[in-house]
Image 1 (tube, rainbow over the protein chains, first blue to last red):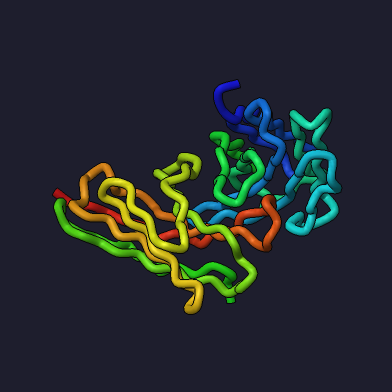
Image 2: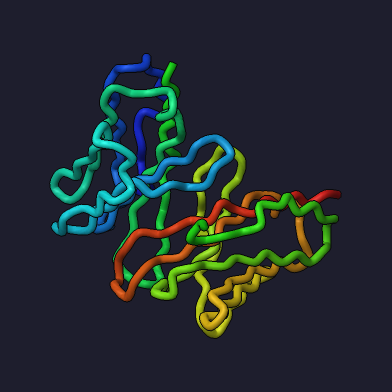
Length: 114
Length: 112
């Protein structure tokens, strides 16, 4: 597609439920990243996929968070047993490899845990 | 200490003013540097990459000082539409890939 697509754009869930967030990167982009941004805060790195390499999961805040990338394209971020502190905007980005390239972000999923 | 530090501001300037933002980073292995712009409730968008020799894009000039681990962004002739949060971003390591580390952002408000 023309840009990075994320769905849903908004998600309200009850505490304790599981949620899945989807990211469809730009076609041909080999790298895919998940970040989250809490209200008034900066971007917090979560996980990064690059081609067929093992993902860099160093930013995942707990074992309730996991992500997959199937076929080197679409990615799903799963949060199990959601907590109120998980409320944030979850941003996905993709990029071509290369030191001079930045990312292109999707418009994010705004997750609210009530 | 945060890996990428910025003055959060806000910077309130009149239209036409010149304003400069600074950023410091702590990881000397950082190899790539960027400025992103984020409008309220929107996703960040790449404003410009920052090259070692410094680079300019219209009214925007970015500079890098590796010795001091310092990055700057200068905006000349500020417009109302420049009002946004400006994020300083670094990429780790010598690999061509790798995660970007974002600063907290500096908020600019340009007044008429």
